[in-house]
Length: 180
Image (tube, helix red, strand yellow):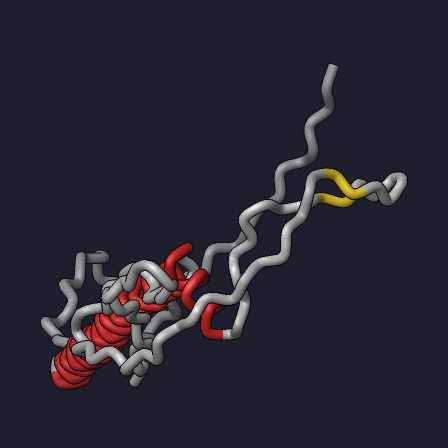
C-alpha cells in the first residue's frame, strides 16, 4: 500500500475588488523574418579578386613553362651541334690513325720498313729469325697538300724513289678542323 501525501491547496490570486483585471496574454503566432539582404559588394569584390589572382597565376605559370621550353630548345640545338662536332673530330682521329697516314708519318720521322723482322723471346732472350738491316731509300720532298675545310683530304701511297723506279704519287694528310 502506498500512502498519499496530504493535498495542499494553492491559493489562486483573485482580483481585488476595484482593481483592473490584468489582460491575458495574446496567443502566440509565427513571425516571418524581415526580408534583409547581405551586402553584395564585398562578395563581388572577393570573387573578382580570386579570379584575378587565378588568372595571374596561370599567366605566370605559362610564362615559366614557355621559358623552360626555350631553354630546352636551345640545349637541344647545342647538343646537336656538339654531336656534329664530335663526329667530325672522330672522323679526323680515324683518318689520322689509318695505316697509310701512320706509315707516312713514320717515313717523315726517318723510320724505314723492315723486310725480315726478328723477334726476341723474353723468357730466355733468344733471337728468333734472321734480321737484316733496313736500307733507307731516297725520299723526295713533299709539297703541302691543299684541301678545303668542308672535305677531308684523301691519303695516297707514299712517294718512294729507288734506283730502278719512281713513284710519282704524293701522300696527303687530312688537316684538322677548327672548332668555334
